[in-house]
Length: 197
Ligand SMILES: [Ca+2]
Ligand SMILES: [Ca+2]
Image (cartoon, rainbow, N blue to C red; front, side):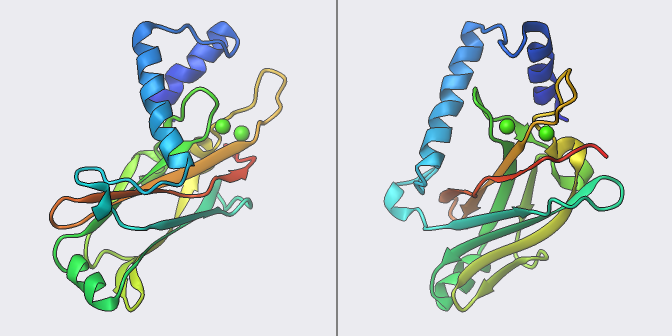
């Protein structure tokens, strides 16, 4: 659980899921909501250059609902940027990288989930030759699996009645080429009743 989630849960406990809203918090939520809307529409956006330079990306998430020993769950990420082999190797060998971040899908705003490194790190970046990150004949791929703790995946935890609410998880991936031009994609939402073990 990160500090953001702690704050949210504390708010909910205090105000019965009606957190006290400050002006700063409203502004923050509106900002995040706009980002979320853009991502929900499936739009690939350029982050630091003209949108025409943004690349088409696909991202798929699967989370095995059967827990492993220690309350861990197998998370499988798949990111694909279709392009020809020449371009794929060109980008790959000249500084292109992929950074991914996990989020909890919620009603007010979506908190970041620190899923990586046994529940301690929110983002992870892959550079050339990192395991799972490859340039191939049909484009650039990231295929990465890791074990994530159920206590972090349990983003909608049990209430005072003890019912474990369904959890909704997705990730965003940013591909940044060697010139600093970025493209963003959002994965599907994976659901389950993950728990702390
Ligand atoms: Ca949720
Ligand atoms: Ca839950």
